[in-house]
Length: 405
Image: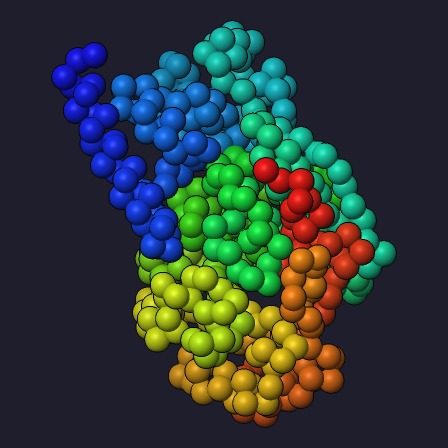
């Protein structure tokens, strides 16, 4: 082993120790966790020897995981004309091509070059599709390495028939919110942009064009920031699904670093904050992230975001019986949001096995709503949907928690 390799291993070991130490201290190692890593140790060891881990090599070769600009660079690297990249992007994201051979505008010789170089188009492996009587549809997908995720399609009726797709950005979740089934799953890894967009492409091909996309499925979007931003670029592109930015919403439990970066993106994508209590003491009982990001700091970040973007922020508030649903809680929320350009979405809590919480009664929700509205806080209520198939907010992964290793 060369001295250079030994030096690399020493550096990697120090990084790993810091990573594990931050975990023990209940700090989220956002910058130390490798974006696509399944096995942090093996990835670091591979990198220390100047090699790229197999899982990263495979993701590099997925054409679905590349933006149009990245495809242009790829095409020109093969000696092709830049405009050919648009054909590749469009066939994948607009015409749902699953094989390179299907991209007919490319010459047979060029297609063969891509295939021989190891490039491919990833597909979503459907394990099961569930349909609720209310029209909600849940898709259970298995990715190439066995990681499972769920995606939910919600359809509103006429005359404004709309299809809103709730997509996942991680296999499992590291945030550990006490009321959320996904938080009880073992965190596997971040999804690639191609895997995030793949959910939209699959559902659109199966159920028709999607009108709205919400990053409210499994995982914390700000904990997979770069891939989420790349996926938005792909979903929004006119050569692909062409879903407008104002029809896309990102929800975060309050990762301040992500909110601050998001404010610099100059996007018209909506931001939603999973709040669930206006009191730090209560919020920290149900959301581990509240220990790192107290409300004072979170609100400071949101104000900074609004100063940069001039955009309204939605606050999501899950109504949990006896915990955060009193009149005083409603009044505290009014006070907390004073001075912000904000609206509130009250969510009827969706219980699942192994969770001690119960939903507030609808009369209690109405009383809470009345206080907010009387005090000038624009508020809507999201009632339970997809109950029979465990597709409602906070229930994703609930049917297979015990089956996960």
